[in-house]
Length: 164
Image (cartoon, rainbow, N blue to C red; front, side, top):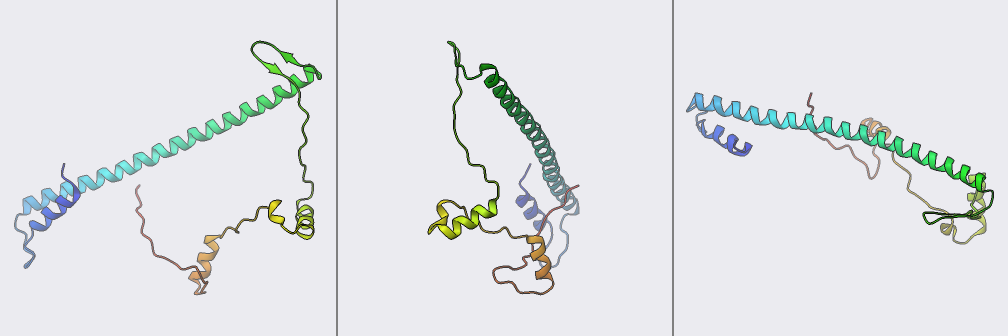
């Protein structure tokens, strides 16, 4: 099968460029059918890929749910094991189980912590992560469509293909 650019060139060659007269109607019809067949093939390939992507996403969602379920089971079994050991250690050739005592930070009121750090520390960045706010493009688009000028933003025409 020929590439699309060769088919398009052959279609142009089947028509007199100066007069627009069709030189070979049968050849032109065959080329147009070949072109349509090629374009249809790409469109169908896109549909297949879209279906495969949806299937992969569905499987990924199932695996994510399965992973979460397994992690919950692990957490529950750890609690059970710690309760059953009651502070004892278990050491066998295949595993070594013991309890550790660590500490973790429990932030009860996030805003209070942030305010305290910002007022009492010269370099709050060592405790706080600052991120840029996320722009809601749908709301921004509505403002731009209403004629408002927003520095750093503009409406840009795009093209897309709809395949059903």
